[in-house]
Amino acid sequence: MRVLMVVAALVLTSMGATKADTVDYLDLPLSNGNGEQRGGVHPDLPYDRATLEAALNRHRAKGIPPARFKALLWHYWIVRAAEDAGVDLSAWDPQRPAEANRAVIFAVYDFYARLYLQHPDTLRWMGFANIGAPAFAAGMLDLGTLPELRFFSSMLMSMQKHIFMDLGAMHAAYLHGGIKAVEEMRDAGIIDAGTTAAWADPAQAVMEFSSREQNLVIPEQFDRMRARLLPPGEIVTYAITVAGPMPVPGGKTPAQYRPLFGGPLPAFNYADREARWDFLSNDTVPAYERLSKDTVRRLVQRPFADRVAEYRATARLLDLLPFRSGEARTGVR
Picture 1 (tube, rainbow, N blue to C red):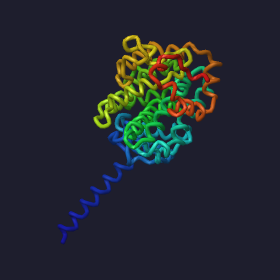
Picture 2 (picture 1 turned 45 degrees about the vertical axis):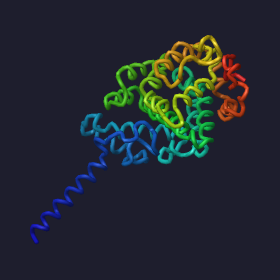
Picture 3 (picture 1 turned 135 degrees about the vertical axis):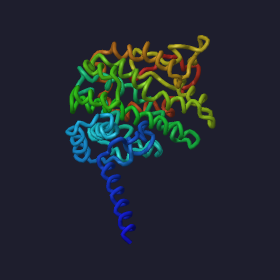
Picture 4 (picture 1 turned 60 degrees about the horizontal axis):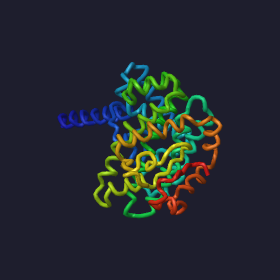
């Protein structure tokens, strides 16, 4: 009997230690680090800001290395960004149909517009992200209307969430905690040294932040879209390239930038990381950088829903005809 009591005590002690470790949220894996599932980066993390802050402050006071509370810290700044955007992170699920996610899709891009309008001299990447978003959002909604293509719609919605979790969280850290908060994200291994250095002058970091987005955050998700067998991802992603307008005034369409045999179709697939970054870094981002603040303000102040409607497939049937795909199309209507 005494032996059984000792065993029971050991089991209870072990269970208590496990529970305490969970409450401290140390060494948690990033099980949803790419944003493809509902909620934040790990299912054990809460969404109450005060609870998260208390756990972070305990670890800081004890001198625990930030790398051990990487998931907690990242999740905290995602929660802060979601609060600022008016988004319920706990319910945000890219696996839901696009129409069911319409409110959160629009709220994220409206949030980017607000941040730019509040900080036009510093948070310039947010203006770029908002201006380029209508065609992206229209793609989520259009692909979501066909059951056979809902995988691609979900992947686009996952990319939107992944970008928000990365760049949106960094912006929240910078706004609410300054450069020290950004440096803590670096120390935790959430961002690299180059990205941290860019925050010394975010007004000049549109290219750097865009590079992070395209070359570090979402390329693997684009690769999986392109590698899809049924329906063939190669065809669907190329169709996205053909259909993709250029909402940045002065920027080219993919077909204008690199035409196939000099014709009206693009000679590259937007899902290809190197080709996509060549296009964005040499044409799209420079076109945005040339815009005046007044022009950017005018563009992002337009209701986002109106801009998305202009890029829905039903509104652009003539634009999508091959013989018209090389003509100039911009987001200025």
